[in-house]
Length: 269
Length: 269
Image (cartoon, rainbow over all chains, first blue to last red; front, top):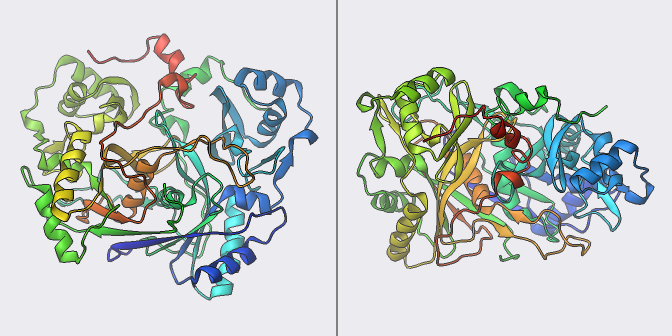
């Protein structure tokens, strides 16, 4: 963590529509050139999961999906197309409730409405599943970009989430490569030299939220944002996103537990 | 919303330690000059609630607080100093559970562990309450900054929050002035011309998360970040932060409701 950094620049990278099987690094390469941008050491690329998922052929034609009995029941319960619900059940690790239009799941270790499956920015009649392994995807993309530009970079596969009781989506990192995604501030002092109480910074999530200012959710064709000057700790690894267990979570700690116990929740097979 | 914006700049504004009764606008004025920065139309200032709270004399000496019976019981239950717990009870609208070290409350309409009360960056033996009225604070600061620099600005009073099941803090806007804090994207199309499903963007929260990349929680004395070029919709108002009711919230919808019903929760008087 470099404390000298006092300025950050962010560039939205416009691209053509990304299609199944596209090479996302080649597309970025061209888009960066058109924008007159050359990546430098420490730059972090935030990529929209929908773009990466599409390139990785994770778009699924709904008409090709045969919903099972459970998907029909839960689809009815949450007001979700049973074929999409079937995909949610296939994709998620666990499903534990929901509201109209959204089944609440844990998918690839992350809290995700509808297993992160999205019809926005998918071709008509299609939905896009999350990248199979966002950590791996970010690693491959970083490795290729670093080779191409001969510098050390960070890559994040980012998604959108609502926060509890908030209107509107902010950012979440699904997979990261090349930097420390959560900074541990334990042991550092506050402005009065006392130990800090808030001890972790969600650096990767904050980078995605920052990128979402430029990305938009709409037809803006900005699936990538380049962030320059962010005070991140670069590493030559692709660390797992650290999570906390339900018991230790402020929101779920003593709330969901009781509900899980009274078996009112659905569990995936 | 200007879709031409494809680049954002952020500047961390270093200041001296902010003390009770300080004039935060004068401090910013001096710090901006030292940094060689002149605000321009559309700039958004993100200010840390702890700095604003301190200037507004919201620091409370714990030794001056007399905890009541309820504060003692709940303090014991959540592992919180009973005097701080007393302040939490006084400050919050509602308290509905918690985990060790954090009582989960709604305070000034926002989900806030320990009513947003923080000992970090407070003098030894003190805690800092949230600004009395963050919306009003942001309005006053904006009005004075706009007058000083003869341009249209945005101001956010920002705080840190953990997200469900995530390690690390990201940003949340407590009060905003001068721009639309949540963009309504309903009616816009995705890249294929289909209506969008994700319909709101938490612009203000995302701006705070972006600012937190430079702010740090530690003794970095960067209580303010100036964000330039963000595609926000400027308005001459200080809108309330839009929230969603528990029933409509993905996380609390069918989870907390059941718990509230079985009266396992504490309620503030």
